[in-house]
Length: 280
Ligand SMILES: Nc1nc(=O)c2c([nH]1)NC[C@@H]1CN(c3ccc(C(=O)N[C@@H](CCC(=O)O)C(=O)O)cc3)C=[N+]21
Ligand SMILES: [Mg+2]
Image 1 (cartoon, rainbow, N blue to C red):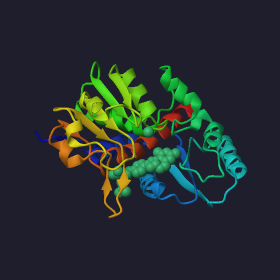
Image 2: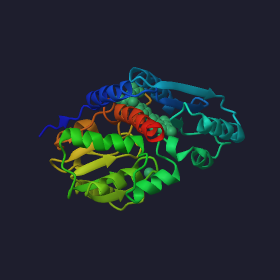
Image 3: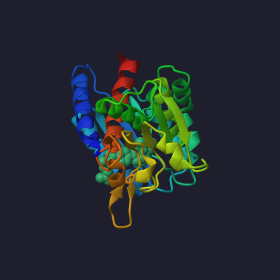
Image 4: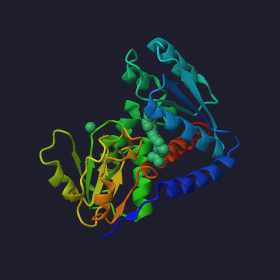
C-alpha cells in the first residue's frame, strides 16, 4: 500500500480562508499579540509564518520582541498590560523562555479569556472536564486533519506518542472526547513499537527525528506526525520515518506541510473565537 498524503498546507489554507470571511463580518478587528523573549530558533519560522497568516486573515497582529536577558517581572508586567488592553483578544508567549523566567508563572498570568495557546491551567482543566474553552492549537489542528482525511475516530484505537502539556496530554483529551480508545505512550513505555503497532490512529509528538520506524505502523493506520526536527544537514524531518511509514499507512501527514501550518491556522481560529467570546 502507499499512503495518501494529508495536505496540511491545503487544509490550513481553507481554514484561514473561512476565518477571513468570519473576520470580515465582524464590526471590529480581532487583535493578537505574540511575545518573544530572545531568539530561540524553534520559534523563528513560526513567528514569521504566523504574522503573515494573521494579516492575511484580517487580524491586527504584532510580535513584541524582548531581549534574551528580560527579567521575569518585566515579562509579567507586559502580560498584565496586554490583559488590560481591550484591543487585544489573544496573547501568546513563545516557548521556550530563557532560564531566568519561570514559564509556569507567566502562563498563569495570562487572562484565560485571551489564552489563545490554551496553556493556562484553567483552559487545560476545562478541556480535561469537557467544558468549553480555548484548546491548544497543535492538537486542535490534528483533529481538523483527521476530519479532512475522513478518518473515523469514534471507537478507534488511538495511540499518542508523547505526554507534553502542549501536545500529548491535550491531544489525548481531544481524541477521548471524540470517543477514541486512547493510549498515551512515552519514553518510559515498555515496548513502544508494539504499542504503536496497535494504533489505528497514531499521533507522534516526541520531538525525536524519525524515531517511529516503518514496522511500528499498522497496515491501514492514519499517521499524524507532529514533530518538526531540523537535521544537521538543514533538512526538516518529523518524528516518523515518512518513507517507510508511507508503505504501510493508509494516510499520513508530511513534514513540512502537515501539522505545522494547522497550528498557525488554529491560533488564528482561537483568536477569532476569543474575540467573539469577549466582544460578541
Ligand atoms: N507558546 C508557544 N506556542 C506555540 O505554538 C509554539 C511556541 N510557543 N514555540 C515554538 C513552537 C513551534 N511552533 C511551530 C508552529 C508552526 C510551524 C510551521 O508552520 N511549520 C511549517 C514550516 C516549517 C519550516 O519550513 O521550517 C511546516 O511544518 O510546514 C513551526 C513551528 C509553534 N510553537
Ligand atoms: Mg515526552
